Amino acid sequence: MLKMNLCALALVLALVCGVGGQYYDYDAPLFMYGQLSPNCAPECNCPQSYPSAMYCDDLKLKSVPMVPPGIKYLYLRNNQIDRIDEKAFENVTDLQWLILDHNLLENSKIKGKVFSKLKQLKKLHINYNNLTESVGPLPKSLQDLQLTNNKISKLGSFEGLANLTFIHLQYNQLKEDAVSASLKGLKSLEYLDLSFNQISKLPSGLPASLLTLYLDSNKISNIPDEYFKRFTGLQYLRLSHNQLADSGVPGNSFNISSLLELDLSYNKLKSIPAVNENLENYYLEVNELEKFDVKSFCKILGPLSYSKIKHLRLDGNPLTHSSLPPDMYECLRVANEININ
Image (cartoon, rainbow, N blue to C red):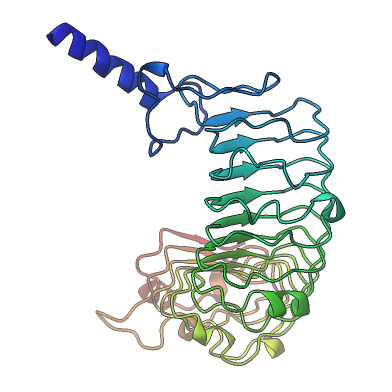
């Protein structure tokens, strides 16, 4: 009896642990003793240790293969898929992950409501394709949407996507009006990456729930007064490689008590924008900074009043060590790294 139990335990552990650096679904029901493993498309790979996943990467596929019942995680990366028929996933309406990166998909060849029928879909990745607008309609279950490295200039409606938490839209052709009109009402959105687009003004109406906002490599030159005040939980903000100058940054723009990381590198700033004492990482390299004002970091100095900055980058500016005020080190007393020319 003991020997039988030990064998069963070993088999269960093997099923849970899996092999070889792939993602494994630890929450999925185990296909006990391997007897209930689903079928697999003949050209694809369905590992016995991870029977709810089907890998169809790097096969030069031009269309979605037959997907058998039981598959929850479908990988179709690095193919030549240029269309998705409306019935492509009719056998797997409980699909949870759909990964379509590096294909040739265009919006006109994604038929009907092929995605909204997937009522349990959590991740949809269509990076590196030929999309010109966001895909849809999408199921309410969706949590993670990635549409990077396309040609997207228009966003459809995301209304009703109450679970959508992560949106990746970097490396597209979006302007601020397209963003403002579409993302309102996403009350669960925590992560938004709009880097490498064509945004010249900060979009209005972004969800106040955001914790992470990336706007690197756009054309932003101005920050509206108190723009970030409504983001009461914002922790990570990146605005590097824009056109920010002192005249476009109101004095209190970045006094956000929740903010942990702020990246303003590669802009045109001549003075250091003031930040809250709680900020930990501040990137200001390659600007035009001429002076270091301690009050940008510490409004007052005292035993309990100091900046929590750990990493500060000031390299690539006309600042020198000799131009730094003596009380800088009292203000930045917990800093691990301060980079200056």
